[in-house]
Length: 414
Image 1: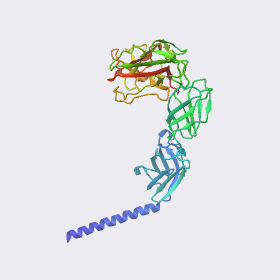
Image 2: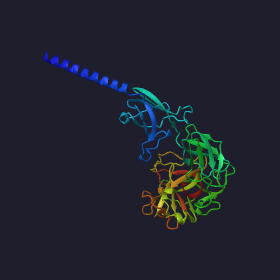
Image 3: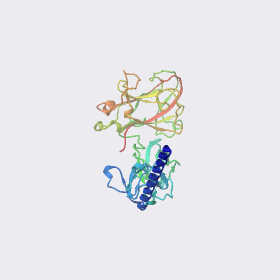
Image 4: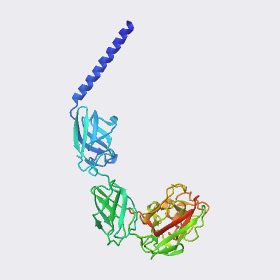
């Protein structure tokens, strides 16, 4: 009986305590008025005193107001955002706007509101989520001929208004992919200058980091026409029917039956060896090397799935070398995906930081990356450039058919 009495008293104790807690919470909710949002600000200490009514998805913000405790749901344009209740006080809610929250770009009828639902009411605040700014990651062929189509790839190509080419030539007719990651646009037939391409959307703009229509002038090492010369190696051709869409002459690398492990790049049509040219002007040799890239156009007809093109300055294997093998997963295994440029000429970009220190004058490019321009280019920044095809794989290269043009060093446009 004594034990039963103790259990009864214990149950009564917890029942009374639970009743008190529920009553207190009920009173607390009754004491709180309807929630009110007064302002939204950034959490960055440098901007904590600034308030705003629009920002981008993915932004960490502080919602400030009154009676915000007990938040149950927070909606950005109707999208239910998750949040940590630990960061929910009566005056503040700290939350990251979901990257998936809709904007005008993805839903034209978005309400542009922030809505908070609490245990004691709800409130709505006018707040605009901006579509993210456009990003250009690459241009398939930076030297596409005027009058032909150019493909610009990137992200956030929402509500695009115009494409601006060098010389401030604006184009308002173009096609944007459904995923907003590519734009196809016809290059103005009147284009004669080089420079960046600019994409302008309703909420922002972006310029390409490298110039288009750039195949002559400072930084061009060889265009096989009127800039520098091909000293020896493969043949050149201007046969547009063979590799259409190019600018005049190009280097022609065609050969067959290159056995596994054959490093004889000096054999027929397996190398490009140019005269000396200025890679980077002497006054810019103290620039950061990360700002510069080697570029060229290539057109590959046959499937390429084994072998590499090695690139060096002045044929110096005791310095730095780049390896171009786009089919490779990085280990030169012949199991990787075969590569072609079936849509025509394609711009290859090799950052100068991707050149690697060779070991003992060999083809082994597993060494360190350069940290300065002079490590790769020397004190004058001049020299020839060499492209060497070797078969460093375990299978025979049955056929190889490619054209190369417009070899150049480009400084990224800031």
